[in-house]
Amino acid sequence: MQRRNFLTATIGLGLAFATAAHAHDVLTLVEAGPVGEEVLAFRGNFVTLIANRDAARLRDMFTTSFTHTHGSGQVDGRDARVGQLLSGEPSIETAAASDMSVRVLSRDTVILSAVSPIMNTSAGRSYGFRWMQVYVRLGGAWHLAASQATRLPVAA
Image (cartoon, rainbow, N blue to C red; front, top):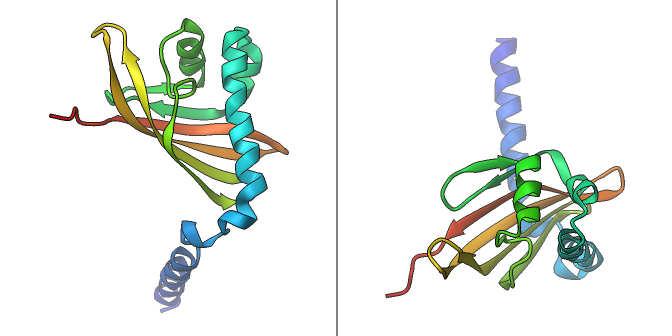
């Protein structure tokens, strides 16, 4: 009997939390302004570090458990992603972005999403990708925790 009551209470608490913690209700854009600006500035540092080929500082910008899921479905960890960025391959970190959304879930968690044209060097043409990145503040510093890129259908 106690176990069933515990499970019922746990499920009820989980549903209440899920309802109360809806991402768009956590902070308004006005409240999130400075946090969003911090993350956009942090994201801007990628371009500088890549241009300077600063592998050590670039690596420190990612969480140790970082993953990036490519449009192909391939999943890379932190070291593979740093290697790709330093190779000069086109990436969402350095591409022009449009339709950007900055969603501040808390003062320490932000999701960026946008659309970017990414050059496919083997095909010799650009493809549109919708991407998202999750940023977290750990120990007072921002880090990129996860990213994913999805190739958009080619317009007919």
